[in-house]
Structures are given as C-alpha cells and as structure tokens.
Amino acid sequence: MSKIIHYRNKCIGCGLCFELQPALWRMSKKDGKATLLQAVEKKGIYILEINRYDMALSMETAKICPVKIIKIP
Ligand code: SF4
Image 1 (cartoon, rainbow, N blue to C red):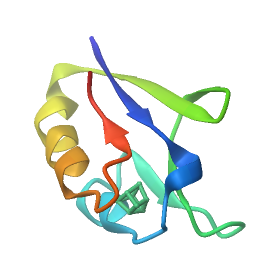
Image 2: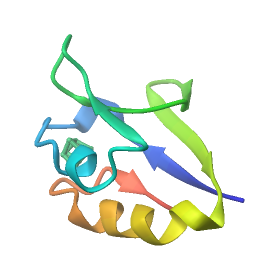
Image 3: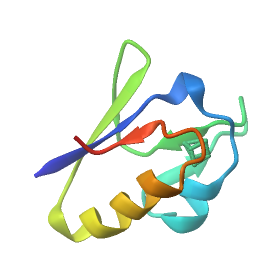
Image 4: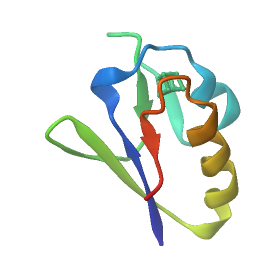
C-alpha cells in the first residue's frame, strides 16, 4: 500500500486530476477545488491509501498538477 497526499487548500481547480483519473477525483461544486474521494482529512491535508493498480496513473496525476500539490511519498 502506498498513499496520495493532497494539499487541498492550495488547489486552483484546474480539473486536470479529475480528467486524468476520474475514479479517484471529483471537482467540488461548492468551492471549485478538487476532492480526493474517500480520503481522510488531517488539518486540511487529505490522505488516501492506494493499491498498486492505481499507482502508475496516480504518479501521472501528481506530475500533471500545475501547482504540485498532489504528492506520493
Ligand atoms: S490538478 Fe492540482 S490544481 Fe488542478 S484541480 Fe487537481 S489538485 Fe487542483
């Protein structure tokens, strides 16, 4: 198991993560930011455990984010 970390406060709502990986992301109608589905929130930072099947695409998603707020440690 690995994880995705999303620094949601800094999201600019470009929608690229959702376009690339709609299974894990949604765009919020409330504030226009991306939401990492099923993630656990800790002090404004969202963390989701992912399996190895989601890993390759998640790496691409992290790379494509223009403000680099999707991290895979
Ligand atoms: S790619 Fe990054 S900035 Fe764009 S919506 Fe997703 S998290 Fe936000």
